[in-house]
Amino acid sequence: MSQFELSEKNRVKRVHKRGSYDKKTVYDIVDSALIGHVGFVVNGEPFVIPTLIARQGDHLLLHGASSSRMMRHVVAGGEVSIAVTHVDGIVMARSVFHHSINYRSAVLFGTGRVVDGASKMEALRQFTEKLIPGRWDDCRLPNDVEMKATAVAEIAIDLASAKVRTGPPGDEEEDYALPYWAGVVPVRQVFGEPIADDRLPGDIATPDYVLDLINGSAK
Amino acid sequence: MSQFELSEKNRVKRVHKRGSYDKKTVYDIVDSALIGHVGFVVNGEPFVIPTLIARQGDHLLLHGASSSRMMRHVVAGGEVSIAVTHVDGIVMARSVFHHSINYRSAVLFGTGRVVDGASKMEALRQFTEKLIPGRWDDCRLPNDVEMKATAVAEIAIDLASAKVRTGPPGDEEEDYALPYWAGVVPVRQVFGEPIADDRLPGDIATPDYVLDLINGSAK
View 1: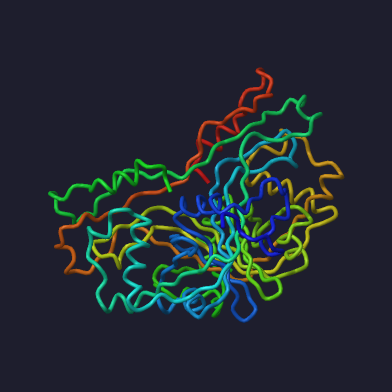
View 2: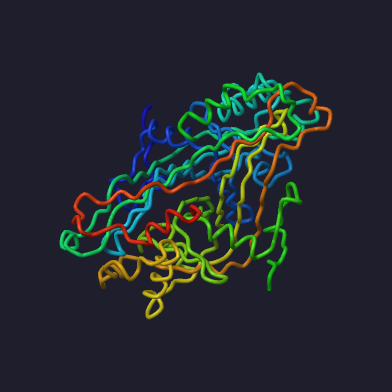
């Protein structure tokens, strides 16, 4: 299945032409992000928490302290909505009304399931490798106490949609004659030069996979 | 009042030392952001939507299409949770467990109220000036049809907290001897050179306030 099912829940209501239910479009947005914003309901009240995300197939992996409100909700099978957003530009139109931003956003809906037992270490490996490819084999792996303190969950992505705006402002035809500047100010996320820890011995060079991370397109 | 009240709802549960209820800390995070993620509950189900934000005192202004799900919820007085997040770095520790990110995040709780009548145009002015200082007087203002299509709401910020991580990895003491690279890869959001609209007459130069926006610290 290359498209998400369309329902009232994930239907893009405003500016339909910007909406998409295409899995590749949604997953590209998710995969190029470091974090997502997880929304959930506790006692009827909304909560939104930013957290690191890593996709595996049709699941989203989350991790966190076992005792955190978000992880307790998610591992208990709670429903979540997760938004992943990239801001790409500020769009300045000749009219206030047509000001906008260029962006790529995805909103996912699903329920959580705890990842435990034999699968948990593998999920943590996938999580780490997704965020920093090459790192897992170059650091100390979790011990029993650390494994216990960390909860891992996977969210089955049941429904999702993407919404994308690109390009110049779209002004009313008669406004193009107005004497106002119009255009786009690009916005992007960039990685800077790595800052080695003060206590790092001088003979440990910055690994290639860290340089690759920086030189690749910023996540 | 320079501090938010502390309640079960906004208490930072994990890594208390990173939490703050100081208004200035929370508002600095909000004011340096372009967007927030708004969480709300419809029929018991969670939704999260990214949207532009602008703070005015102890209120957060939101705007959007009058017909959008989020704006309908907010103008009806619905409860929201709004997260504002800046990612500042990827923190690579010697152990998987102590990997982290540097970030500044704020989570706000409140209820919405429609801004209408005489206050609405002023709220839109404040919104625009917050995001692009100087722009309001250099573009065409909304006409009646456009005003009707746009909903403006203010959220009274009842409760909030900030959570901030900065600095190098914090490894277990015995791990500092391990032969793994450790440090921080800085992440930041930057503005690029403005791209003038193709249909802009050649005699309209990029305004100073656009250059100021770019040369200022990126929002």
